[in-house]
Length: 253
Image (cartoon, rainbow, N blue to C red):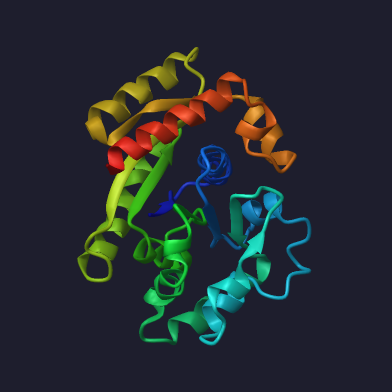
């Protein structure tokens, strides 16, 4: 199963979602491979001490046909979580990648070689709809779209939906939107309540029942390089991710 976390808007919690979901999956004894296709490399920096000391990164994997995914995979301090990391150098290869007539299949072809080794491959996308998001969409089985309860977040969904449809048209017809995830909600604010109602009305059962509250504990965990299920295993926040994983698995089933 290959999932990507995608949204045009930055700051909606894509990387946080990837970190904590990988922890919930690993906690249940599933093997996770994280793939960082965001040149800002926040996901990589969470799990790798020095992303500039690595011999092979996502950039090398995509540019060199002779490099196998196994050479690009880095282990983490968590037994069931591996990562193909990136750094800022990833952002320098967009033009080079597009010179290949089959460029949008590059990540897909690489991941096919290791797909059977992991229960979950999770791709963290940049906050844009360019080259790297397209690579992720073409390589994925499903998309998760995180949303904040705000005007811009709701309006920007039309752009990611259009991009998903373009990817489905020829490159990856089986691609499915697994669901929209309401993230970082402060339900005490009436405006956020209203936008939550709007999201649920507009997208119906495509919206996950699980919602993640705006909590500093998620950010604390990421800062320490820990999924929240490892940082505060008995907390409300950790339990929310366990419930989200169960819901996600039901949707896929």
